Length: 525
Ligand SMILES: CC(=O)SCCNC(=O)CCNC(=O)[C@H](O)C(C)(C)COP(=O)(O)OP(=O)(O)OC[C@H]1O[C@@H](n2cnc3c(N)ncnc32)[C@H](O)[C@@H]1OP(=O)(O)O
Ligand SMILES: CC(=O)C(=O)O
Image (cartoon, rainbow, N blue to C red; front, side, top):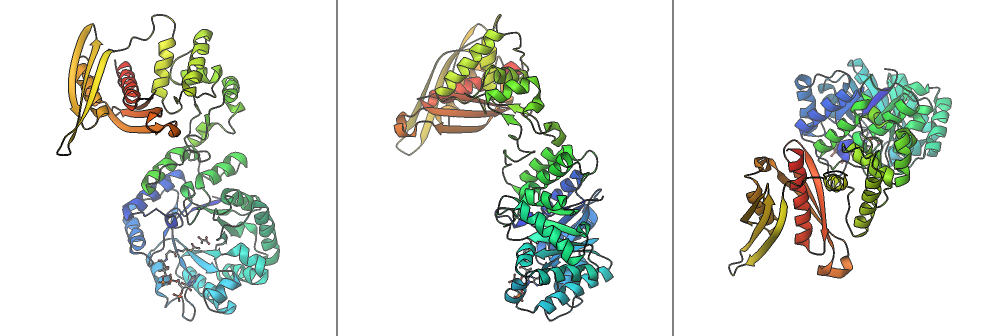
């Protein structure tokens, strides 16, 4: 392809604090990136870390890449030796990848102070290493570390590194904003000056931006707009310090805003799924607010937004979310207007278009409840039950009704703490009383309720409480505070969230629990 999407999730991404890929993780990441359609996957530094060496060995038989080629990363040879004799350069060749990317010093201050060698020797290190790689049948890319800082300090020297690499046979010379201090206007100006000074066409140059000014994506796009055709990114922006240019934002911007075909046909719509899968493998919670692919990237909270979205979703979305495989969501909160409630209900399969009174009632109830500490934003199931409860006609038939519950917690002399709950419920015309123990009061209530209902609703056995979040809403009141409980429940096929709010934490939990079972039973009737 004309544009080279060069992914370095497995190399620079792995330099993020908290990430430690196993070899199996690396193979899985490479498969997903290939599926997403990147052209190059920088797999790591063979010879530097045993895991990276093993990755390249296993990749030979375990990876069958359709879109991407594998890249081995390393450094130019050491000062005072030859590329043939340098064991790190040999490890790069042993990886047997079609492409090798070597990092080279391009700021004279780094050459003299960090490498502790001369400018000429550094040029020789670049020349020898590239020539040796090319003579060994590899495509050679050169990452020029601290490129922009070096170019500002001593443009002649930095330009000489670029020319040396190109003359030695490098296919691409990559300008790296290693310290991540650039802004887009600086990048545009620098790329123009580099082309003028070196005579190397912008299409032979590449860009690699760290995100220390939070401009890595913008800087990468600016370089491409200035003519650069090779850009390095990492999935979800993982990387050293604040990270790197986010692959998903960069390719979406280039493809959707600038109309540049950087990915194969049909790949961009995999962005959201691949981003989430890669976050799972990295063991990092997906960033819900990530541009394009985050769960909140197209989530609308304000009532005014929703009223326009009702007319046309694109009035408040910069692109159609489906082009990156994402979905629009309407959030129901105190900021909702009637349009928000109508759209959210439609999303949940309830058409309120012909029910203006219900819309007004639900909107008012939501605002009142939210003022009292409720939050429906993350509790779609409780919101749906609220709407169904307000629907005109026969109304929503709750699968059971509560007469009373009682729960006690006993702390025994031997330190054991035992909770026991009794519930009295009405179900299908029958009065049922059940008692159960649990490892805590909410667990005991859950067990007792299930004991009372399971004979009538055997599907309850598949319901599992998967998360229980408690938030104290008025911290200054100490143990008198209002408590909000969010319960996440699943049945192996679906997950749903319910909310309960009360001054009493047990009652808040009970309300959320009753909603959880009611919603699940209503859905599986
Ligand atoms: C900007 C970037 O992010 S580039 C990617 C950086 N990634 C990593 O560093 C992760 C993997 N690194 C490692 O595992 C280790 O640092 C290794 C194996 C590469 C080197 O380990 P060591 O031999 O113990 O050296 P150490 O890490 O202390 O120092 C780096 C050496 O490389 C030299 N070096 C640095 N850049 C270059 C370069 N572009 N070309 C040649 N040599 C270089 C340094 O001068 C130093 O040499 P010295 O040991 O003779 O002083
Ligand atoms: C090569 C690289 O990761 C950098 O210069 O930031």
